[in-house]
Length: 267
Ligand SMILES: Nc1ncnc2c1ncn2[C@@H]1O[C@H](COP(=O)(O)OP(=O)(O)O)[C@@H](O)[C@H]1O
Ligand SMILES: [Mg+2]
Image 1 (tube, rainbow, N blue to C red):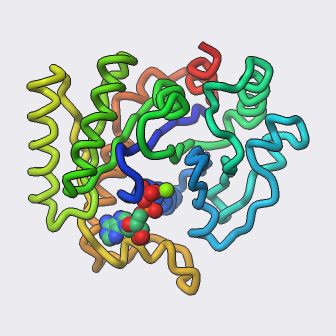
Image 2: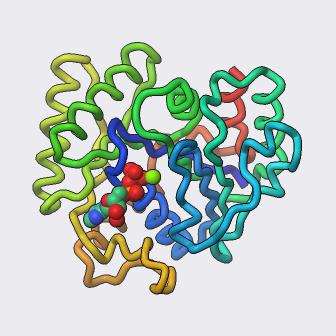
């Protein structure tokens, strides 16, 4: 099975990356997909909290050779597994070659087991984020209509496209007042990046402000997809269907496992 790798980043923190990852994972499992989440938000790793799970090992333990990557895998649900990033790894790009190759080796051991690998990244511009984003098939930048979020998203997109030549960025507006407002927010940022960076962004949908959508953080609620009565439900389903049919994965046909992700790491 070839694994589709989706990276979720943002210019500013707290804009809804992890909430999106968890909801995406739940929706994908509804479609019968097996999902692995890599919590690469190394400063604020918290995916496990949405599933009320505790972590005993993380990537730091893998790098120092204490455990294998497999041993860090936490079963969040029957169909969703997690690789906890941990907070001790300041910057993956600064790791020495041995450490990086041990991560690469570790990922090859689990390749082929998952339909999707969803990578939750740290906010902002760091070499670690840039390294990860250059390795994934689908690159999603999440942002809200807050001024700080818009300008930080612009700065991130600028560095990604101008300095790192990373193309095909998706901008996904979150916490918007309606789908129409989301499309408008996308349009404004896309206008600016097209004008000043000569880069157009891709639209795969947006997510409205919706408390039901955030129920994934409620430890008393059973984990499951958000209900059909939620505004964000239809939007999330549309985003999932765009992801499912996305051409970024077409190069995967015939290839195996996580090779694309590993190639990026190795280069
Ligand atoms: N569409 C939304 N509607 C309402 N609240 C949201 C939405 N998306 C995220 N939130 C809230 O925003 C906060 C930050 O979200 P989180 O996913 O942790 O952000 P990040 O991972 O980018 O730091 C959380 O309290 C979450 O419940
Ligand atoms: Mg987060």
